[in-house]
Amino acid sequence: MRTMGAVLQRNSLPKKARPTEPYDYADAKAAGHKIAQARRIAVRELEEATLAAAEAEWKYHAVKTEKIAELRANEVGITEIQERIKGENDVNALLYEREKAKYLVLIAQEKLHSIDGERATFHRLVEWSMQVERTMPT
Image (cartoon, rainbow, N blue to C red; front, side):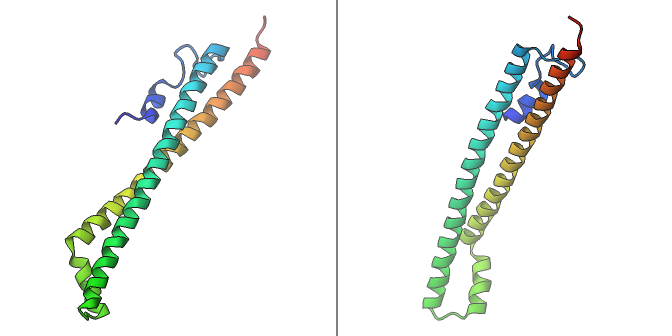
């Protein structure tokens, strides 16, 4: 999956707008549009990852609860239940999926944070461009 973060790192600033020269309106608009689009995608990915994490959490607890109830019905002690649950392949597989989903949420949050940092840098460059434009002779 190609992420907008990777695209932004390579292409967020138009070629003719570098830190040594001010933005013109078209350059600023194009760069702003790319950053806004990347942010919308990152927010959507974070929402999807959060929902997937919640679903993985629910599935894990549902299966674990079912296994515990099954063992309790057979009058197995709490300590033994805890040990047996650790050895249940389906519970462990769901635990893995739950943990993976949690980390995918963290990755999505970091991506959004990175884009927000680029956005702040973009705003500083626009402000700088406006100051340079005011001081340039006409």
